[in-house]
Image (cartoon, helix red, strand yellow):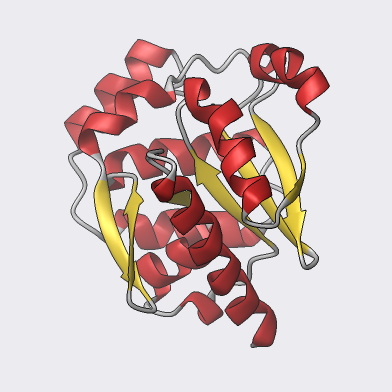
Length: 186
């Protein structure tokens, strides 16, 4: 599907720009999740690109992405976004890119910190480019948080979780992290 190829191409462009600026950019959901869980990014429908990064890297990331042709991300309101939201949306050639520094806005009261993910990153190769991705354990918590945040409005998200659960997962770590963050019900 050409839109899937467009997403993969724009993901690569964004990741290259962020890596070139010294930013660890974690590909999250979208085409990379399609590759990880389905073996092909085209087998999992996606409408945007999601990249997780450290909160402190957001201003530098916005600059790097603008130089790469992405638009959006109002710098005048950046401080408020960083404090109360969890993402900023940019676009390039009608492809949306969501830069995320948290899994949910503060008002959701989901205190799962993405900071704990950085020491456990894995990698995935997609179209000859290697992307950092979340460990299966962190990815499971992130997908559960995402589904709960959107009130499980898409069946696809449950399928993703089921496919992820078929992979080797350190369940003790998942449960410990969920208990610490008080998100066991998710």
